[in-house]
Image 1 (cartoon, rainbow, N blue to C red):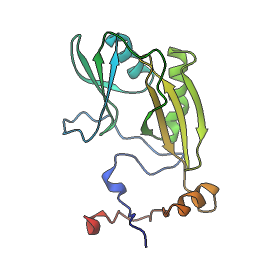
Image 2 (cartoon, rainbow, N blue to C red; image 1 turned 180 degrees about the horizontal axis):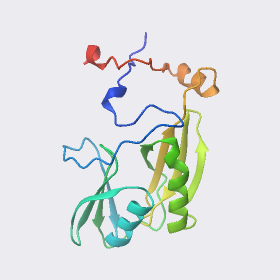
Image 3 (cartoon, helix red, strand yellow; image 1 turned 90 degrees about the horizontal axis):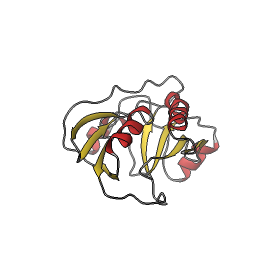
Image 4 (cartoon, rainbow, N blue to C red; image 1 turned 180 degrees about the vertical axis):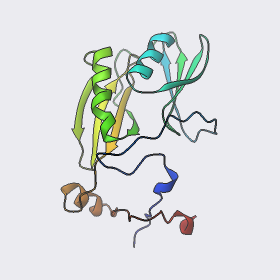
Length: 178
């Protein structure tokens, strides 16, 4: 028996597919369950890259101190003024979900703004297409989009080996697990 259950209704991420439509940018204020804080020596330049390259918008800012960026609900980044940033990107990365139709345009926009900053896109064994971007602050960001689920694929077999099976077509069953 598996402890996993379908709880997709909790997420703003749409069902995977070539025609998946991303949700609108989320402008609401909520208690953030998680967020990333990134130091930058140039708030304006960093904000410009994150907005024009990575598709975020400025939710609010404190001049000279902080810019709160967001895409979808629960995709929050705080750019904070700093005297220095790391000279090299860390091995660690953080990921944001998107839809397949966003991956190529995002990669192209980041390449245009910052040549050499993009690796990919590439497909993963866990059924996503990812693009890795190194930002002006040397943060390593991965944008990932789920590919359509093919029950006959190697990716489906990989997921099944971990105990994760295809979600059903109905609404999630999170209520009975809550």
